[in-house]
Length: 289
Ligand SMILES: [Ca+2]
Ligand SMILES: [Ca+2]
Ligand SMILES: [Ca+2]
Ligand SMILES: [Ca+2]
Image 1 (tube, rainbow, N blue to C red):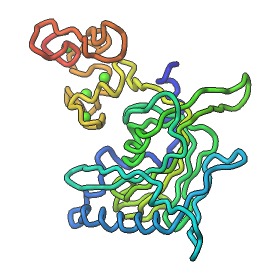
Image 2 (image 1 turned 45 degrees about the vertical axis):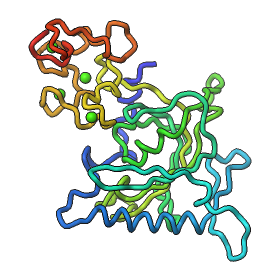
Image 3 (image 1 turned 120 degrees about the vertical axis):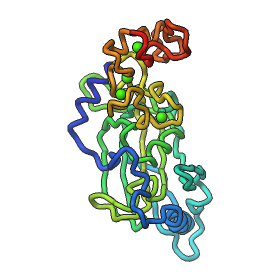
Image 4 (image 1 turned 180 degrees about the horizontal axis):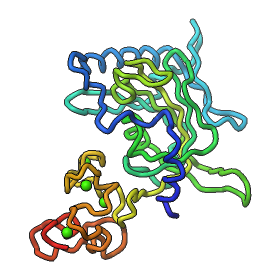
């Protein structure tokens, strides 16, 4: 499948899950204490998870519902069903909670891949701020951190779409992500989301596609040169075009795909040509072209 074409089709649309900027971690305002906010958010999330329960989808519904636990009601709180993931970014500790309704069947996305998804986003007061019930392509490289981390716990499904019918999948990854504002829209917020709002997303992962955003024959995840899981901070030739969008990664005038970056054609440049033997593959080495 030609991923690039798919991506350009969706690039004109601006979904709410798109991140505000590449390095927006919610700590960019000088007097804002992001670490303290992470603790406040976690208290809110824990209180929410302890006081609510999940009713899985029935009768063709994709997501199921979350409901308040009434006094005396004998149900399992979400808190006892979720898995906790600790995430440290810029020395700030976050907790992301996720509930797996169905783990999915096939491929797990990396943070640089493209995903075909349904989702519904809610605030902790149950206000819905966004929803996509028909399958929508998104590039995980360009969405909020909570998504980048959260989707790694799910796999995609089987495409069971009959000819000339809307897309449908079986065995999709399906569940809920709960995360603090620092992995969402930080202390800025966005349309429909106030600053410092923890968020929850019902997600349904139909399909994962290994993305090569710039079509230079290296999969985007392998353009993460410093290997920190973030493709938005790698710009080898410092031309302000990140490697995963840069068709000439070393800026030497020869296109990356013409510098033999991937002789065995698997999208991983671990076999890239290094003509001068200096340990830097030709496509990242301005001395060879
Ligand atoms: Ca990186
Ligand atoms: Ca560049
Ligand atoms: Ca590139
Ligand atoms: Ca070169």
